[in-house]
Length: 367
Ligand code: F0G
Image (cartoon, rainbow, N blue to C red):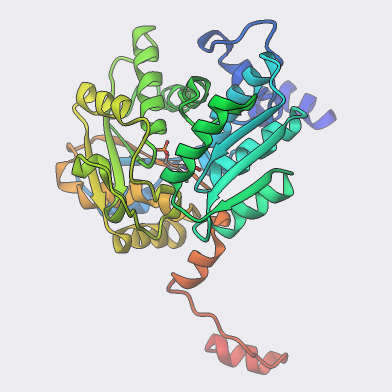
């Protein structure tokens, strides 16, 4: 590629062109061998974006960054775990995978499984999955079962199915998922040169917070960072079992990705919170939507509602952030996954039925 070699001669580093996917990039940190067939869509290497508007809102000379994992190949952080889970399933000779999902896991599982030539079965809570995610699972070629129950029920079913039949479970109970997802913490430290003071992250099934903590600890143990962050996990108020300390039977929130009442990784997540002197806290749907809109119209970053819980939480707890601290908010999924919520929740002017002539347009523009 002439452009690439020209850039190289200039000494630039066209990272995105050369990025091999996270298994190759972090091979020595992952449980893979020469025998593992690497199934990759070149996931990872997502940007850490400075957030000046949110930093200003927090004040106290705090520097806020957004780890925009919505820029992964299927639009969410799940791809980090799925490249590992599917590669290991393929290595083990599996021909089919199954998961329960609020949407993102199903999209990612479908994409990676089909790329590996495997069948993908996904169970979703009927009526509670954002349109874009459903579109992805179908387009990628999964078999989709919409069950009349919530995510927790669907997960209980797929666990039983995977126990009884030759199908690999690719929910975050699968340990390879968290192994892949821990690379996001590596990337944050690689970008900042050290761990942040706070890591703000949305919590649903509590796998990602556990994975990040594992990553931060491994990097610190290897001398790649001097410090560890406080892990600040945010849940939607209507689906906050980690905050309440008990299962929520009927979880409810606009952030359907984290509409979960009984997180399977709660023990790991509690450990992350305890060891890091972190906290679990709830944010209301109104606070989530406010942060979601601020991210879009203030920072130019479109994430899905569940992802905005990390920023909503930071804003809510801003008084507790140490002066001058570095804070990373994890944006787990892409806003395009859920166009309905964006169209229903914004402060923009949308003029419809405009006559197609210049004078009318100029008049509407206020000139
Ligand atoms: N953010 C998004 C966009 C998610 O899709 C999820 C989980 C989370 C945050 C929470 O992560 O479960 O590791 O605590 N989505 C799962 C799914 C449940 O099925 O796609 P967690």
